[in-house]
Length: 242
Image (cartoon, rainbow, N blue to C red; front, side, top):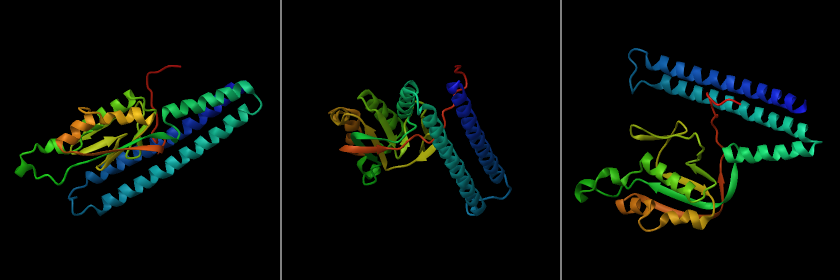
């Protein structure tokens, strides 16, 4: 009975939060569409658009703060439910561990930091260099992330964006999007794991070495402790059934 009551409380809390986030996103999309459809708007006359973007950003921050509050309340409910039960305490520990694996909590540990940047010092016309080779692309980030996970990384972030199993790294024109947020150079990739294994990405003929050879600015640093933030998005599954 206790577990059923807990599940019901959890479902109610998460349902309310998801509903509020959905409303906020719909309002943001509708507002931006309305502004961009106005007749006569120009690049030089975009003050209203800028104000609206900041307003919607504040709405998102307020909604996300409510989500964090709901998570804290949920944690209190879990603690109360597991206070007098050894079996439930074990379940609570499992939930916390699963949250770490899902990227829902901030984590710390040893690992490496990889820094990437476009090379702005090469004159491509004078040196007859392919300009695509000296800039960082989304495909480079995908390759590096895959190699880090293959090398045993437990957690990865790119410019503060936690990489989870639903993360998309996309090219949108001349910009890169991660978790549907714009990310620009310089790029800082943090990975928690056994430093020696992760640092092996610097091996001769490895992907980082090839990028450096082509002209991209690349540096790698081992660290005794790295902090990687939690995933700030929402997991959405449409077809999975319990």
